[in-house]
Image (cartoon, rainbow, N blue to C red; front, side, top):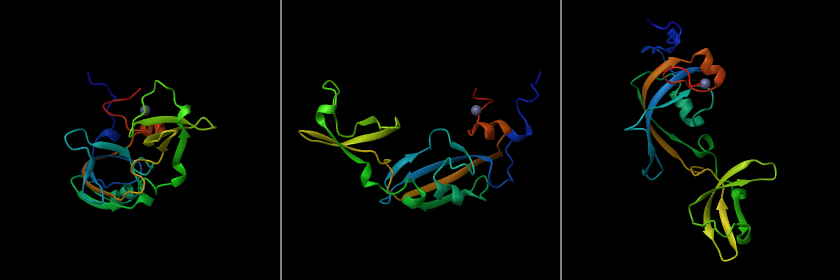
Length: 176
Ligand SMILES: [Zn+2]
């Protein structure tokens, strides 16, 4: 017996559809920095999926994907202002070394969770370990970088009502 309702019309991809708000889009991508060095890629794994028009991917990429079809290849260069933002020097923090637990090994490049006065958690990478102080950088690792994307659109379908209500993509049935 089939299970009506499990696969609704909304879950089927439509090869003629174009990317618009409230579409679930699957795409493969390779991301390179300004110098052409590969930063990350979905190739060899699952494509990335997102709901278009909900700021789930960087703005500069979301803008150029609008109106594209399955099978299209898109390359674009995204400036920091439409990517992960400019670097903010105020997010470089120096903390007296004595504030770190003695047993916690400190290593340049290690990422720590910091809590501010409002209990917001901030991820910060150690950039320098001095005799008396430790310097951390809480900028996004890709802040200030121009992002060069090469994208191939793999699938487009309308998001289901559940997906729009939850704000995320459901793969192979419901995620809950
Ligand atoms: Zn959900």
